Length: 293
Image (cartoon, rainbow, N blue to C red; front, side, top):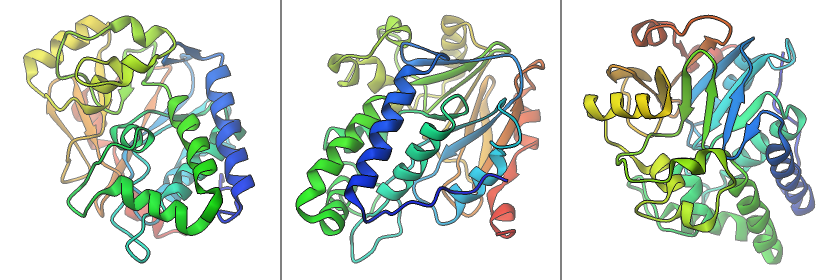
């Protein structure tokens, strides 16, 4: 059973090393072309939604991924930071990033962090909130408190890790995983198969920006995007799913892993893609797997 790595979260050198090794591993992955990870048609993937440092859920996800059981077991992870659990008003969710970074370097062909809007906001110091204040500032406060005069070094390593994250994970059976999907059509699709540049991260038409901030779930638009990307099903986060998972329109499944009803789902990569309803019905509530720890 795969367990969380044992890390010293107070050691600046250890944190920097984890983030830098993970960035190198992600960029060098043979599964990656540009900003897209292409999975082989074997094994399975554990698809997750936003995590937002929800207590206990990352540990449950790692357990369910069963990475040590087979090299063909994959997990996609996104929106790791900026949770509601604060320490003295400070966000210390850098620890979630460090855990995933260490896993990505230990299992480089199996652990797939994807860029999400809160990581992008943190990377570029752009104010963002889920209703509890400026989470970017609270994250910075947490780094300052823990690492003092080395906080900016750790922040720089975190930015390198975030900027190394791909935008998309896709499989031969038509599965497409990303944090969200573009809410507009006038973006540079070529960015998905090349290295990203600064303009790709900028509003309003940068491809990375569109991929992590889009909220449009119009059925016609979703079908147009599926056709444009030659995909059969989008599995995303970013939008609220009260029961942890839902299919608001045909061709789209939304997963949340960041609240008490948070869920994940396993999808086989060597078999035809299940329907959206089948994916929703097969979801695993994370609270059940937390209870086993």
